[in-house]
Image (cartoon, rainbow, N blue to C red; front, side, top):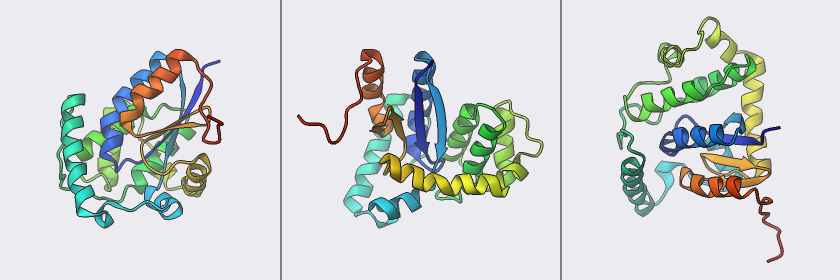
Length: 209
């Protein structure tokens, strides 16, 4: 049976964008069963003490821009540092991910298309037509997709993601949780790869060193 990994992310995040292809390639390499967990990150911040970008100190905001440039070059991906439609209401796109999972479909391609639409193509991904266009490019059937995403069942699942993230110890995106061990940030993918390669037991935060 393949390992299962929980993928906590928001389709608002440039870091999720920068790490998405590398993570999905790693998951495929090791046969990981990925559980996609789109998460309302602002609500998670409220629970865990994080600050949304506009409230962070200017020094931290400036450093973020440096890091984005470094990782844009490292990953070889196009990325606009200040995209036209950022921030945007991410809830519909996030909920479409859950609707795709409920239909038994792999949302990886859709996630990648939406992230590129925000950070490389500067599209307004709060618009249903933009979300459907991303699904079409990912080769997914779009009939009834928006209606499914707006259903009460998907809404409940989306709201439940906040508690799931906090319980798992997640406080930022993207986070990859393997056997209860959290790897926070796309810059931790190499460490995740090391853990998978070695097959080691997960590290715990209450371990006696």
